[in-house]
Each structure stands twice: as structure tokens, then as C-alpha cells.
Length: 91
Image (cartoon, rainbow, N blue to C red; front, side, top):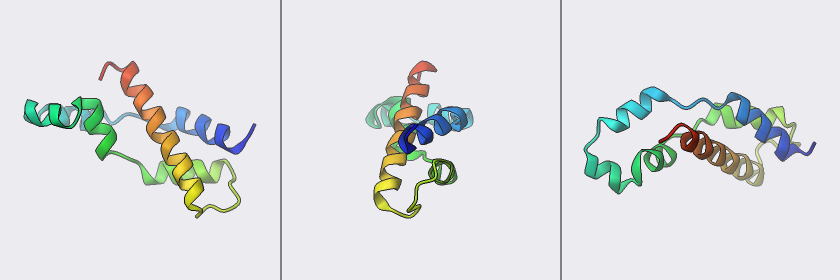
């Protein structure tokens, strides 16, 4: 399995949607929520988890753990998986 697939698997197993943050978004003005692209759009544009992304890079054993390319790749995976989980959750 390549490193990207390993990082994806790690994120799929460990990324948890912050339901408290979802509730906080839902308490905002409806116009603001719509402006941000709905609850899912707001969540994706303001929420990320540095430690989870860093751990996925280490778990996948990327040789250069500080490489911009690796960070961009795994960060994109994070948002892809978060988007998928939010969609499945009905947000």
C-alpha cells in the first residue's frame, strides 16, 4: 500500500466530526450560514486538525515529514474525508 493510501486509511479511522462545533454553527444567523455555503461549507472552511494531519503523515512514514507537498496531500485527504463524513451525516 502506498503512503497516500496509508494516510487515507488512518484519517478515515481517526477523523471524528466535532458535533459540538456543528451545533455552534447551527446557532449562527441563517444568512451567515448560507453565505458560508451551509453547515458543511462552514465546517470545512474553518475546521481542521493539525495534530491528526501530522499523525497521519507520521503513520504513513513519509520520509520528509515537513515537506509542503506531503502536508498538502494529507491536508487535501483530510478535507475530502471530512466532506464525505459530513455528507453521510446529512450536513
